[in-house]
Image (cartoon, rainbow, N blue to C red; front, side, top):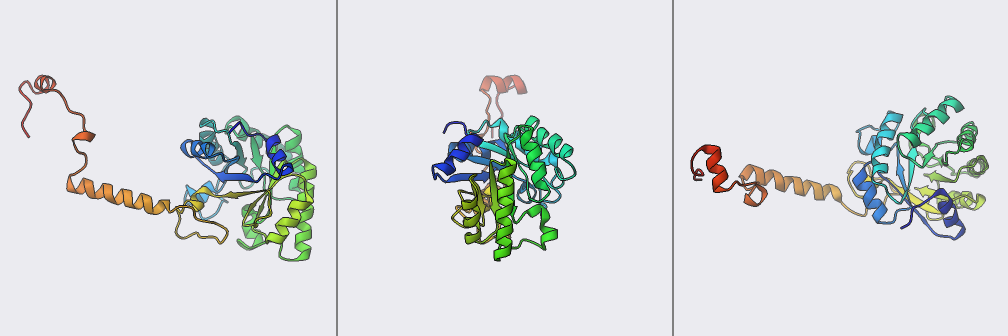
Length: 283
C-alpha cells in the first residue's frame, strides 16, 4: 500500500472504490492496520470509551487525543491519520479552532482533523481548511452533542430531518471538507446524502450506501461485553483470547510451572563459582 492522502481518498469515490477506516490509539495497532491496507486511521475521541474508562466522549481532552495520535504517527502507517477534535476544542471561536487543529498536526502528527457538527461549525470548518488543514466533517448523530440530542438516537428518520442532513452535507462540502462521517442514520437517508455530495461519505451505523465504513476497532474485535450496538459486526472475540491467556498464566505462576528453564537465564559453573566463592549450589 502506498501512502494514502486526502486527494487519493477523494479519487476513491470517483472510481467507486470503497474506503476502509478504523480507529487506533497506539503504535502497534496502527502498524497492524497499515499492514492490512486500511485507508484511514481515526484517532477518535472514542479513546475515552475504549481505553480511558469514560462513559462518553465528553471528558476527553485535546491533550488526550494528541497523546494517542502521536503514538499512532510514530508507527509511520501508510494509512491517512485523522485526529478527532474533542468536545469544545474548536467551537469557542475560529481562533481557538485554528490553534488546536494546528496542535493536532504539529504535536499529534495527524494529517487531517475530524470536526463534528454543522450550523455555525461550517464557518469554523472553512477557516481551518483555508489555513491549509484538511477537515473531515461529521453529521447525523454527533456524540459530543448527546445531551442535547437526548442520547444515542437514530437521526434523519423523517423527510424534514433528512433534508436538513443533506443540506448540512452540502454546506460542509462547500466549506472545503474532503470527506465526512455519517453516523446512526437510516440507510436511505445516508444514500441521499452520499448522492448529494461529491466528497466521500464514511458510514457508521448508516447502512451500505456510503462510500466507506468506519468502526471502533475495539468493538469489532469483541473487547467489550456491555456495549453491543446493532451496527457493529464482531469479527473476533479478543476479550476471550485475553482472558484465557491470563488465566493460564496465573495458573502456571501459582503452580510454579512458570518460569521454566527455557524462560530463565543461567550462569556457567565458573560464573556461579565466582559469585558464591564455591561450586554451583545443588538444587
